[in-house]
Image (cartoon, rainbow, N blue to C red):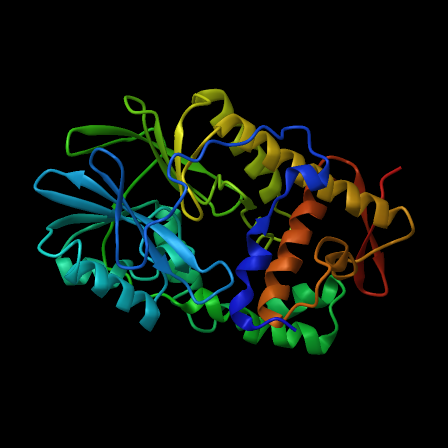
Length: 366
């Protein structure tokens, strides 16, 4: 069984287009083939600095960016609330960033590897927090409410969809620990909304938002420089986790994600420099959006094949998409991502729900 810190291998799935038989196999362009070493930074464009903050997971880092602002620098994303992450920031602040002045903290979405140290940095530098309303309130509701994810309706949700009682209990308690790796947020924030314009140090960014991975995930696009700070919406070699959760059991986050990919492909140029939340910056945005859409199409076909043999619960379908043994933490993400594909297929009329012995099962729609 994999360790609890390996959850990112489940929630951000590695894609190999050639192995999967996908059509869009042109190589992406990686202008910066080596990431900055721990404690170091790299300029990726005039006035935009890239640093990596370690994570204690299989996906062992998050990218953070420093954007030149009037009389200082804005920080975009932070890493989780963890001793190793704080130590990495201390190394940067006493090393290449020593003496720098900071003006604000911009957070792309409420997942702990992005928002975890926002409160710590805002308090330390006495700067405001900028993020979407969904990210701010979602973080307070999920990560900063210790009992939120252990409520009975979470266990009932897992049970209705085929988990054993023992597994549901483990997943609804041990499986959600990562989501709590967040320092308390500032009591106020400045709201960012798609369609806004954010000016940092004379550079104009269009504020975009994407859904599916995280609701109202903020992205920043500089049309003058053709630079997209993409957060986790588009990553070079892994697919972001797309999950259904108990509070919105009939939601279609995969449909929202595919819609967001389509909007990026239609509205931004192919040669945009994508600065993602993980892995390397790249060019080839349109190709990458198509690869990601194709990847989810392959997974839907795997589910359809499994359901052609008879009714299946969501829990039955997890090993169809995730073939290795999973610990409770990984299983919570794998289950929720499988459910996202199922709901999307139900929404499209490809699958239908059937009630059997108190469980929700899936059959091919006639």
